[in-house]
Amino acid sequence: MVRKSIKKKSGIGVSVTLLIMVAIATVICSYIMNLGNRNIVKREYYDEISPYSFFSKIKYYITGDRIISFSPSKTKLDFSVSTSFEGLHSPNAILIHLKDHAVIMEKKSEERIYPASLTKMMTVIVAIENLHDINEKVELTNFMFQGLYEANASMAGFQPGEQVRAIDLLYGVMLPSGAECCIAIAEHIAGSERNFVKLMNQKAEELGMKNTHFENTTGLHNEKHYTTVKDLAVLLSYALKNDTFREIFTTFRYSTPPTNRHPDGITFYSTMYERLGDQNIINGEILGGKTGYTDKAGLCLASLAKVDKQEYILITAGAKGNHHSEQYNITDALTVYNSIRR
Image (cartoon, rainbow, N blue to C red; front, side, top):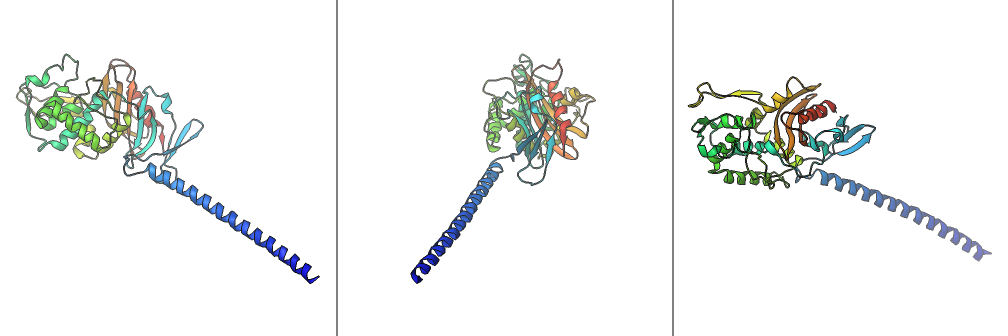
């Protein structure tokens, strides 16, 4: 009887021990799985905001017809956008919150496009960073005008033999999109447009614009001259940190001082503001921008806007139409900026 009692107690002890071991194993497995999940989340988080990436990526949550996005750097709701890029005229687009470079919305943002005159943003920032004195004089030569009129390039209105300050050429590049200003500033700085384009491609590489290659300073069509709206957003985000670039980019009207060919100077008007007219956004304003157009590139626009005291940049490209048709690049900008809610 004693032996049977001992055996019975031993059996109960073994059962209890097994139950305890199973419970402990379950807790340990659960902990390991949760730890693994946390590690995966952390890995995804750090991949998305890697310092090697210019932009922070955002997770999208779709509720009905609204696209709501969360920044990985914050735990609360950052933005909501009451529109979809699918409804835009532009097949390629990207919207960025400028302060933290958060990508709010994007549509085929890494697809190659032809940038047309959006190229001139790179021309201007590279020129600014390589000029010894923005007030130094530059003389335009006949050679600088060769082929521009034949290519139907936009012109600022300077003439061969005219002596112009470098800063006036930069305004001539950005506001009326003057091709002769691009060539003049490029030759002044680098000796030739080809050498200046090397500086543009070097800057693109420095900025991590991996899907960009420039062949000229003007944006005139060339099959090897391409970029993406995402790369252009990287460029504009960078360039706007430069005070001189920002001042030029956000100027509506600019008058040059008298020159040897224009005793009254020349007055430039921003092509974007001209096409925008009296239109603007509801809870803010469009601060500046650069338009672009070629038959191959379509209607393009790079713009800066302030909505509810926050700055955003929008790059759109490829909208059908021309300078004489409805300006779908402007229409798209108004639609997107008006949809931003915080």
